[in-house]
Image (cartoon, rainbow, N blue to C red; front, side, top):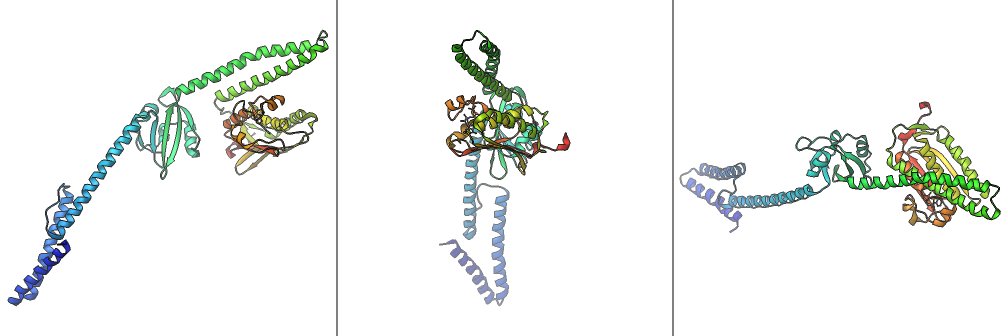
Length: 432
Ligand code: ADP
């Protein structure tokens, strides 16, 4: 029989039974009232049992007849299901914690205000975090590098990592990345890249040393070739091989100089002693050099600059980057083509751009253009006196100025190379 039918018969039995007794002794209403009180009392008793069962956290439910037995049974099933789910979740959490604890990378869960919510063992070893002392503290209070603060503030974590020395061991180099997830949560990962960093340093020291060692012999060869060419003993038949020798030596010198510049840009930290750079003036002299490089190829070179637009930076580095872009435009634009050099500002910051109507670049080459020695056409680049390092230099200089290189190009239509500098780099004329 269903518990509700049982319940109905219980109410019916108690009320009619007591009502009939009441009728017999002439107190029908009183007995009906007594019946209601008995029924309410029975419910109150079981409600109390339910409350006590919950508050004393007993495992087994109390025994009860009818509808209350059914209620207790359902609560008991629910409780068992919750216990099972809790156990499973606990096991899962334990497994997750064990696996992240075994991970060699430091893992830190950060809340909306960068406060530390959880971290693994590696985070204690690599970042010096301590539990429970550091839980709930903003990570920026514990890792105090300005570059780290900037990295967190700018919020652009995609494809963006940061390298810094471990706050507790100067011999450990870390690469840090942040992955946002859920609502305002962030996962901070730090990997020990000491070994990789050392190899990188060895490679860049090697290139710098080789380039440096080659400099002197090349200068000597250049001098000797010039002397031999100018000498009266130099016969006509020797002139051509000597000219070729002079050209190839000049090419090698350019490569060596570019390699030295690149290793300097790579190894030296961005200097904080930025100076206001009068870009317009610098561009005028680059323009003169571009006109000379163009020679009789009659390019229409236009210069449009905002005279008063000045940025903080390293003059020498900016000159290298801008002249590389302008000279590339001259090299890769056929006779009579147009080249437009612009220096302007807008809400996004200051911009330097070079547009040409030259041969353009196929889209598949664009992502690799800033790699060292990457050329679309090796023979053509060599003929034009290119080293294959120009755009790598541009990229490094821009990185050091918090700028970005933007390239648009279409084969046989032309190219646009634009350097975007953040508004914070702009200087006011009055700061001179
Ligand atoms: P390079 O010394 O060979 O010019 P860069 O690093 O400056 O080396 O440029 C890499 C390659 O990008 C060049 O070899 C060339 O193929 C291509 N490139 C650069 N600038 C232009 C341009 N303005 N128009 C067409 N191709 C270009």
